[in-house]
Image (cartoon, rainbow, N blue to C red; front, top):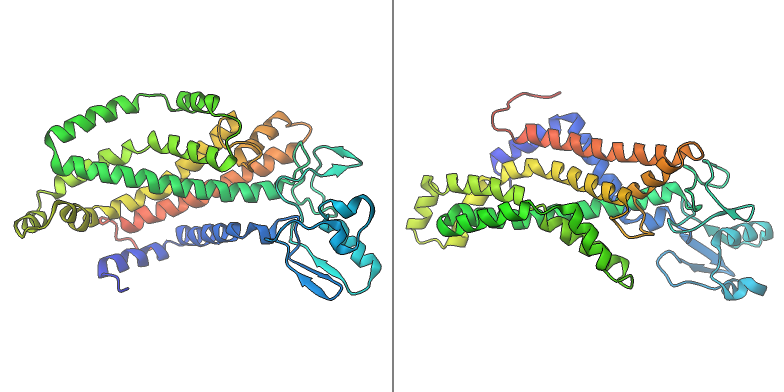
Length: 357
């Protein structure tokens, strides 16, 4: 697809803003890696070789110890691949297990001397950032929590912009009673306290609801209370653009209303909308982290940066590595997205012609 010269110039200007461009590359890399987190951080191995047969258990079904020649209590329980790896090394008969970089899943409780507790970073045990108060690996929970937060924020942004842009364009284009009616609805809707609604809804949701269902409900609630800011902006832009010559010419030529709005007016306002996207993502990540910290966000035991911050603040003196890891991770994520947002704003600003080196 060939870009028009103006868009190409904006993208070239974005690449010239090194801080934002490299932040974008780093964030995209982390996001792509997080989509394959099971290959990097997992208690299931990448490859198992047993009696000349290769197996790839990462995305496969749970295997019992009897399938690997284990007996006793281990035969009828899911195999512990870390123990199996040590066993194969001791036997030295050609069998092997290749584990991920971090051989723990984010839900696994690790015991130390038979006790489940928080432990400081330990490279020998491959707990590189330590464990939380229930013995779960912090790096695993941060990485999976990052994936949940970034995917949640992307879905939130797409749905918020879909509703806000559609209604805003319609309000600005049709005006009149339609515009006045939705302005009053938005004014009333904006005054409903968002946090109270989250607390009320999650107080009445049955505990039998699955985790994906509860996450979807939280996403819907956040979207329903966040689309109004984009509606006001698109209403103003559409109201101004519909009076321009190109929109009037399209109407005279018989173009339909949806075509005028979405094929003519919207492309002339979307460049400014793009500059809002990174800051909307920041707002979504901050909101979900705050809700998790308060205990009204993602349902446990979903990995979450906010939940780690809550644990860390409650154990500042006994386990300072928990809050340190979570705080640094959150700051890095928000900083990257903010740098991207600043670069996009500079690149798409028609009044800016500064060359960044």
